[in-house]
Each structure stands twice: as C-alpha cells, then as structure tokens.
Length: 453
Ligand SMILES: Nc1nc2c(ncn2[C@@H]2O[C@H](COP(=O)(O)OP(=O)(O)OP(=O)(O)O)[C@@H](O)[C@H]2O)c(=O)[nH]1
Ligand SMILES: [Mg+2]
Image (cartoon, rainbow, N blue to C red; front, side, top):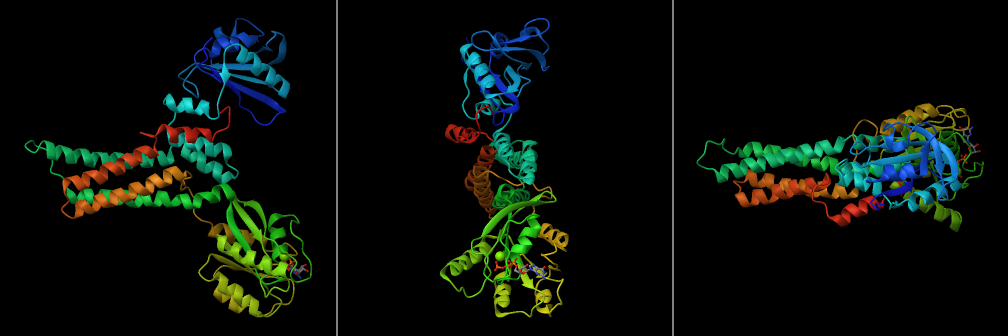
C-alpha cells in the first residue's frame, strides 16, 4: 500500500465528544474503506464524496471498535488538494488509538506536525502567508487575534502585497522594454511617475511592517498598568474591572507587592491588566522591590490607568505619578467618589481622559472601559496586522529597497542602480507571499503547527 498516505488525530484533548482522524494522499479512500464499513449499501469508495456516511469502524483485528461517521473528499477539492478521508468517531483515547493503529497497519504513516497544511501549500491550495495565518488562527488566544488571522486567511495582506509587487514588476518590465527596444514605438519611461509609485509602495510597506509591533497585543492583550500611590484603590479597581476578587484589598497602605497580571476582554478587545504596588518611598526591602516592578510595568504598558484618591488632597506621591504619565496614553481615575470630594482640578486639567468613579461600589466602571477601548491601538478597526516576524522583516527590507530605487528615479538614475533595487524589492515581496522561499524557512513555518493540521 502507498506510504504516501499520512494520517493523524486532528481533534482536541481526549476524551472529547467527537474525535477526528484525518488522512490525505493517493490511496486514502482505500485505507478508509479497509477500516470503515458503511451500515447501508456499498463500500465507502462507492459512496458520494463530501458526504457523511454512517458505519462501523474496525480495529486492526477486524472487530468493530466504534459506530460513527466518515467522509471522503476527492482531490483536488479538499484541504490538501489530494484525496482525503476523515473519521468522526467517539472521542475516546482507546477508540482513536485503535483506529489509528488499524489505519497505519493498512498502509498509512503518521503525519508530521503541519504536514497536512504543508501538502496544501505544495499542491497550490494555499500560499505561505495563508499557511502562517492558519497557524495564527489555531493558536489565537483572543477574539481579536482570531479575527486578524481570519482576515489574513481571506487574503487581506496577501492581496495588498501581491498588488504592490505587481506595480513594481510593471515598472521594471516597462523600463526593460524602453531600454531593449529603443527603436520601437514604446511609451517613454516616466521617471516622475516611477518615483511616485515607488514612494507610495514604500510608505504602504513601512506601515504594514510597523503593524507587526502591535501584533503582540493580539496574542497577549493590550498591556494596561494600574498605577497610583498606596491605598488609592488600585487593587479595588483591578478587581472591579475583572468582575471578581483577584487581588487582596486592605485598608493598609502597601498591600500589593508583586505585579498581578490578568487578561480581561471588553467589547471584543482583550487587555492585560496589571495591578501594581503603590508608589512611594518603600518602607521595607520587599515593598521597594515591588515599587521597582510598578515602574517597570508602567514602562511596559501601552495604556496607564493613574488612580487618585478623590477624597484626599493631592500628595507628593500623586505628583510623581503625574510625572510618570507625562506623554503616555493615560486615563486618570479619580476614585472613591462615594466620599466627600477634595479638589482634583489639577488631575482633570492634566489628563484629557479622566473619570470619577467608585471602585469599591463598582460604579463608573463602564465609562472607564469606554475610555480604555478608545485609547486602544488600531487593532479592532479593520486594519489587518502583520503577525509574522518573517514577513515584517521582509516588508521593511523591501521598503528600503524601493526607497533607494525611488531616489535613483529622482536623481537622473543609472539604469543599473534603479533596476537592482527595484528588482530586489519585488523579489523580497515575492518571498512574503511565498515565492522563492528557502526550504528551511518553509519547513520552519510548518513545524509551528500541531500534528494533524
Ligand atoms: N470609600 C471607598 N473606599 C474605597 C474605594 N476603593 C477602594 N477603597 C478602599 O481603599 C482601601 C485601599 O484599597 P486598595 O484597593 O487595597 O488600594 P491599593 O491602591 O491597591 O493599595 P496598595 O496595594 O496598598 O497600594 C481599602 O480599604 C478599600 O476598601 C472606593 O471607591 N470608595
Ligand atoms: Mg493594591
């Protein structure tokens, strides 16, 4: 039997309601037929394709191990582009192990990590950026990460890059035509137009490459540090945002020591909230160490929530907080508004985004969440971020190459200089979308996948 057929368990952790076993390759239908007998009618190889068939699954000894469903997909209309078979059995470890053993005995071999998707790539069913997006989708931990990956899978970035590459190739071929067929009636090369096109490409590429810096927010959440002097209610606010008591709250100043991080999703945007130690002159070694971590969290954060106790006049430590927040995306929270209020005009004048609330009572939290969403980097507004470091590096290099080519076009270029850079830029963009990619890099991409995908 053909060892070209690979098989693997493709479902989640067992036991599960349903276990999915997949096979791909020429001969997959025969292997399925040897382990699966439809309850009604002919062998499965004669059944309709792309249709679930009910039947009996047998183990290596030929005895029935499950009664379940199976489906055949005929290449090229399948995920991998080859003949494929899938079994949807009961998600028991014993059934899955028994079925796989029977399948391997019948001639399939175990699939390697990402081998199904690699075959899809090799058979032209998907390009390399779609393959990378598939891995992102599988590993996405936030809803916005999944949406970004799905948009990539639909070809968002691929189309834009392919289009820019094509514009560059059009310019290059026009340039060659003018040089090679000087006597013929070819439209002269328009340097001004070439420069504009290349500059436009360069700007778009830089924007795409830079989006990679924000892509970590998709997987980790947007980091938010909750900062303030001791006892202003940082931990109370942290708990109120989470909707449960994660951090200890006491009336003693200096309760929180370590940074406590927790993810929370509001309106589809995931944040990584960090509760921190109150900033003051530390009284003990442990508190001083905690305060150092608070400052680090503030540096790492994309957004700072600066908490002030609205029932007390501003203290020297509050001014220090204001200093830390200068030129940072900050929301000022004037807490404890259930108590008589002190003069907080310095805070509301300093911070355009501010909210008065009561963390203890959980009042005013929606307004704060609204401000947080408003300050969020552009990750949920339709822009599709680059999530692959490989692609980001290539895009940045291509932007540089097109910038040089554009300068050559502006400075009464020599043909060599212009072509060298423009062709290099086009070739780098080709690599982004999976043309001329080294086999090592391709293998690296597929090794990120789990077995069975
Ligand atoms: N009245 C009132 N008290 C509050 C409010 N929020 C917090 N507190 C009280 O303020 C005290 C300190 O609250 P925490 O949340 O522990 O303050 P913190 O800023 O985390 O303090 P450290 O961890 O010591 O820096 C507790 O007694 C809380 O119950 C509020 O909205 N109103
Ligand atoms: Mg605290």
